[in-house]
Length: 364
View (cartoon, rainbow, N blue to C red):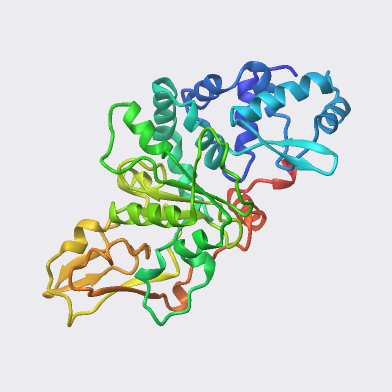
């Protein structure tokens, strides 16, 4: 494996649908140098998105004319997996390893390792390159409201409600938000709660022995969701109908996605939910309490009434319980405004690869 391993890895990560664009001053390389040793970077640059055993990886690299040893590869892969730099999982031939996108992926897995140096390196890269990442379709995340903010007689599909996503899981956990932790480390903290990033699993007991994720009961998970809602945080999940294994509770002041709207002027940094806000003019007293809760500037006073800008409204429902007169409720968007939600991650990857003009077959 010859050449600069960090340049090779940066190029490989940018071949993924998620993207990892280069910067003029090499901020992406400094970020990778902080996280990976040269040997780790060189090996990670050869991985695919599918899980492969060390023996399979060694055999494939030998075909490409690279000097490899399955035993040493296995040790390096295991070390990287423990540090959250690559993915690991079971295959029919044993433990397998695969490349993980930088975002959403490697960076979020550094919650237990992030320090001020990493926080500043990420901020440098974020400011220079993240706008390109956030503008690409389909979006990384989509908004989901809590079920009780939706009009009571409306049918809600499980993937459309944060409450239902929690209810479908068999194991629940919570961990610190790396975005708020990162901003605090560079001296720019926000006032929102930190331990509100939620993780789920279909396997009971998944988080019982985790060093990073604090295991919760089902009721504690629902309580955490309510805590986030009361704090005015927007619930977002992966942008697919299947495989919703986490809920990020986001704010425009710290979170990498919503900062794109507040700081870069990108209007649609997340895919909106299937719902939109509606004001009952008979109940509304124009107290403007809801305006303070809306992070998307979708509520405005016009003609003596509170109006909803349906283009800016993402259907998060955060303002709904804040209304003292119960004059707000989410209703389903008309068919022509319904967002496209890929069925699963594979379809999401394919759609995003097409949007970026890359050949996903090269990394599968």
